[in-house]
Length: 130
Image (tube, rainbow, N blue to C red):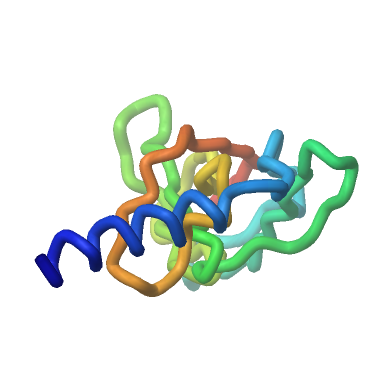
């Protein structure tokens, strides 16, 4: 019985968290394009700004469920990697796409072990490794 009450209470809390909060509609990644060296390994810091349904915007972070990734080059080479804070490091020549992604409903993204299942919103930028 206690377990059932806990599940019901948790569901009500989660439902309440999402009510009345503006959803994320887009992500702007800055800088939109950057160039650095691959030897020595150059770095570029990227930021992700969340743009919301209510017209407001703010910088996103890991706390919001923000994740970063880089694409391989057109030839399949891994020319750059990116860390959880948006710091990209070039390791080989090539052009890669940097992608920042976050859940559409950020209110469910808290450190409580609950998986956010809302749609994902992404933004991209370009990194040229010379």
